[in-house]
Length: 248
Image (cartoon, rainbow, N blue to C red; front, side, top):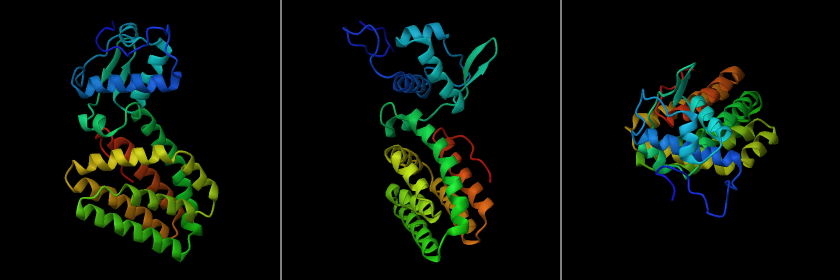
């Protein structure tokens, strides 16, 4: 019988057959759940690697990969010679809206998008046509209606970001996004669902970031477009755990 809190392992398996990258995501989420449920409150010290690896029946390398992601997401911090401590408590809604094992991948996809889409916006500011600009503004206006009517708007949000990539005139940006489209949609669903649980000002802040991107494209300000897109996507990443947004 597994001890409480351990990951289930089939009796015939001596080691999990799942790939280590996926397993580390599951461990990441298990620790995140412990924090969200206040089993590990903000300021608490995490159990030692030995205790956690035994409890979750995973190797230390897998555990360390999960802890590394938690540090990168600002959920825990490591103090030399002391251990790891909880610095941020995610809302239980994060666990509710995200598919099991997906949160770490969602955060990584935001990192990837911040790099790819900021460069696409940079080129789009130079190369966009008036038709591109009108389409981009139309999708932002449609998102305004989604906010007004309390709708999720994931598909429209995706259409907006795809339109900006297409306006770059480089299909490789579009293909790069297409290769992780399911991850992108999962991330958008999570962040927009979380926003619907908040005051309307939350989505209005997101919209202000969209308008900042549009204004930079309209003015053909390449650097401003790059910065506005990167800030928007980095803020989407930090908003998963309700941390302070980044200023442009």
